[in-house]
Image 1 (cartoon, rainbow, N blue to C red):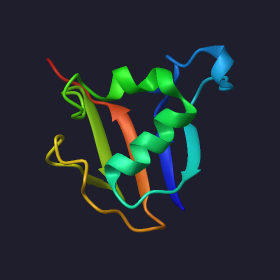
Image 2: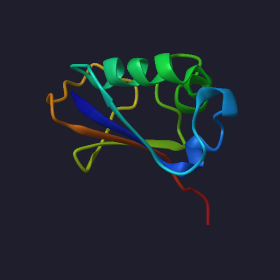
Image 3: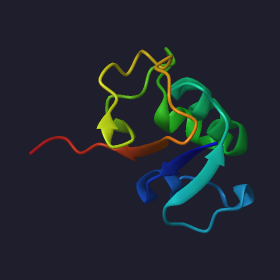
Image 4: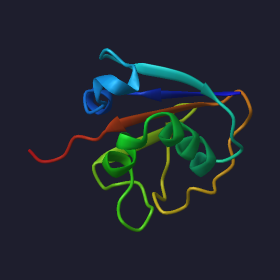
Amino acid sequence: MAKVVLAPALTRWLPSTEGHSGGELRMQLAGGSVGELLQAAFARHPSLRGYVLDEHGAVRHHVAVFIDGQCLRDKRDLGQPVQEDAELYVMQALSGG
């Protein structure tokens, strides 16, 4: 199973009813692609979907996804395969100046 890690800036939006008390959230999830892993994370924490994905199902502009330390380049292509032991790290990206 792959490891999906949600940065604290995203987990702060989880309601207390979803069983998380703040900080980074690590989950072991099954999935063969970026999209499958995200869907598995959203199944556990449905409120995160709108913070991570836009209305077209792409990763939002100000969210960064890393697969084993490599940034997901095309935020619309969630079909990118991942290894069974991969780490998917999801964080809010910084922008501006």
